[in-house]
Length: 226
Image (cartoon, rainbow, N blue to C red; front, side):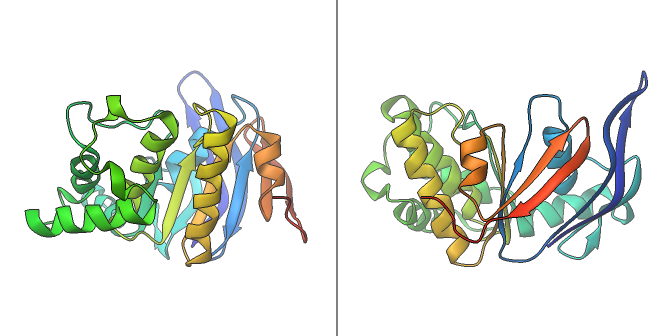
């Protein structure tokens, strides 16, 4: 699903955000990409989410070389294969949960009625069928994040990128979100959780640790803690 070969990302002023990263992620994996602020996690997210291109090296997602695609084809790749979940939800404040989720298909050419039907099904999947007509101001933090997950899943992506998905939540809500992420992975979705939380990383089957733009460890656990 993801293949990075000697991938680097540099910015003006001699800033090297990623330094020769090699990383392979198979279809159906569930892993944490963990490290402190400034370690390169967000830059990696931008590369594997096809939001940016590497300065050098190769990044392939779902078999496609990011550097070989035009901007329009990268947009199509994201729409077809990748779902995003962010720490701060990014929900439209004046729209209901079902409308926020349906907007995930706004540019996919799906008719209005089908968008709403699929949005309702996605909200049922994240156990929010009773909150379809609630606006973000009427939802808890955990419920907002589950709406964001439903929006990411409405296009049936093969890869879900979750950037600090529990960072703005209390412990109980965070546990629910992580349980949901594990359930989604069990249905076949490849999931990368980007986090600075070592406990979350240790609870997942694979954790890749970043420091100063490089992979410093890549380990798997045989027995995952709940």
